[in-house]
Length: 294
Image 1: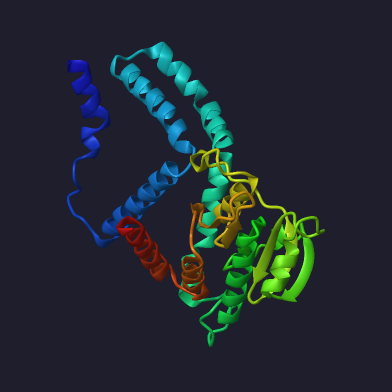
Image 2: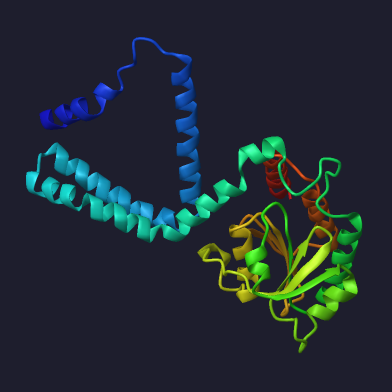
């Protein structure tokens, strides 16, 4: 017991002693650190890192016990393997770290503040109402005929690399064009179609598959691809199931299934508006509340 108290006093209690005076910069630092810690835990919760974290916490508890009872041989081994362990963690968490850094880049507060993007100041819409009408009409026809489809509506993050994997189209979006693209046994039906502004820029594009184990085995490659592209960008992806004709949409790695045409139209209207970071948060809260009330 004395060894435990001595370890706590030496390693923890002495750091809990408050400073003699607290300045404004100290408060700012606490707020920044709290936000960073919260973001890290939120990231861990939404990725496979949560499972790996349990193993890391077990090892950390073992190190604390070894430090309390002064197991010098074990502590020496851990100290010499620490650099190798950090390198191994970076390799293990490489996909999650990459996605986290991509999301940080997507949500640049400076670009949100000054609105330095490709949209003009006079327009507050990403695409027109006509595009929404044509896409919803095309999705309705595709769902009724049980024709599988992947339609990506680009937002702030450009998907040039993904578009390059397909065939360039650069055409005005119409419901007939979408139906013809995804018609069976046609050269363009396999893959995703990408819409930028009010034009369809490419078709037959290959998308990265989501590694989210929470999706379930009932969803096939089309749905995993739809979720996967939204995990690395801020686009809206509309998915039509070939087996059931069910309409789904994905955004920021979250998929909503079994939505009606009116719900799809409403979602597209929400994504039509160019929004700032604060309004984006409000939209997420509203969507969450609507889902809970339903």
